[in-house]
Image (cartoon, rainbow, N blue to C red):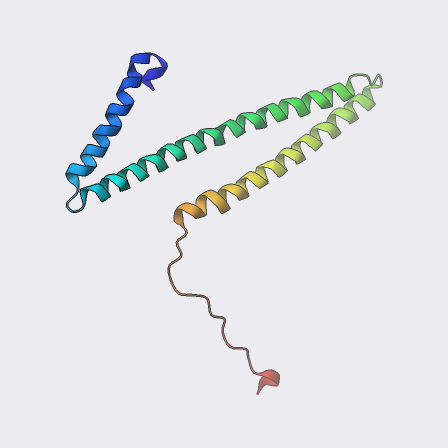
Length: 141
């Protein structure tokens, strides 16, 4: 973050990575090379997650641009209408369409968050396998 203000702070990045890996080596009780490899993998995973979360927030900006474009389209469609009732009808129906479309986008994004991001962090393949119960006897016998 400091590199945005001061370019010389870029030299701190590699030094801090070496410090992190050296700390993993020194704190390892057994197999320090394995501990460094694990620490490096965790560091790469954290960097990857940071990049993906940043791109995810860029999507929010894209939704704002889409809203502005849809609103502009509705107003452009209503502009040439001279009858005030016709103009109002176009604006109301157009905005209703925008609301429904954006509601669909919110539904899809919420479902994506729950299914792909929430479950990945908390769902574990542990426990017992599902075995359905036996079928009830026919005709009450």
